[in-house]
Length: 384
Length: 88
Image (cartoon, rainbow over all chains, first blue to last red):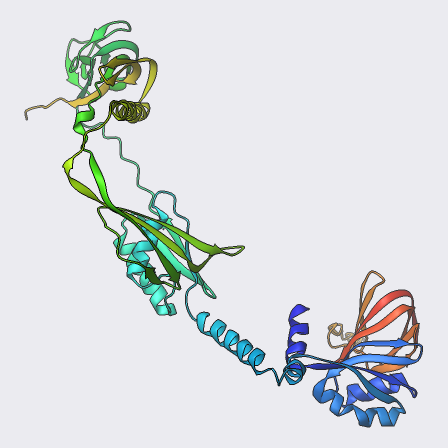
């Protein structure tokens, strides 16, 4: 309905009233002559309705035949607006320039987004497509979009499929990531299960083979846990693919050493702001050093997406030639930070049962008791 | 003497709805009525609109009656409609 009203407003329409005579005959004659009427209302014998500009110019004949007197009440629409403001050249020029700019900018890409990625980072996908010209501020054709999607699938091995959908000025890169095929379990080779670390056995779960250890016994790295030599009732032996899960309590220790880090004082710190407008970056100021560089983008946001207009703030610095001394407090912080990284790494493959941190000078040493899987497969080499 | 076979009755398919001359009415509650197959307006006053459809004259009685559009044989009538009458 809004579209119809907008089109009517664009071409202009007239609200009129008609009185006296026969309203029904008047409407019939108008319809017969192809004069479009809408919002026809009869209030106390006085008819009010709306019609197009050309319809109103031809309505006199119908009014005369039906004995009605027609009078325009209100003229609405763009042409009447422009006519009323024709002396205000500035408004007309401004309006025209605004429309022209809008039409011109509509030919460019305003925003690019990525959907369907879980493992691959959005920025990485965007930068790959940028190499093929799919970026904010560019003019793209359908062929270009198709080519870019095909090339991106070739360039990024983790992608299985990609396409770029265009909705006006918005591009949506839709991707599907490859699902790696699961590794086939190869049980054709004879193997033993041996310990990969020192530890105290907590549980032994045998899938194939003979147990060579017991719960509660201590093992060292390389000890046989599950044997791949099968004994048969007739006294013969054969080699099989031994497998199983052996969990043990393992001690982990990490000595922190902040001396392994190098520290440099930043020099020539500077900040530069740039105006980003449809892919064009207009910098205000000198280039910032690139030794240490970060940038912050703040774009104007609409309800659904970012607009290609905003400010980019760049922070840059270069480093001094010589190493700088670090304070004791900083040493402590680095030590705790490296410990935290180590704990995060441990949690990927084991369960921490107990842990403690000991102060060693200005640093902290970390030690923990963890429960983890210690059995690994070791192939039994057979000479043919 | 052989009996003469009775001639088979020819069965005709009913005319599709779109091809029939009968008017089609669609009502949205008592606030809006769309009439298809409208030939012209037979009477138009403040509380009564009568539409001619060729075979029928359909009258709509109510208050705040408004013909929102009347084009290509389709009339959209709005208002608080209290009565619809059919005159053959």
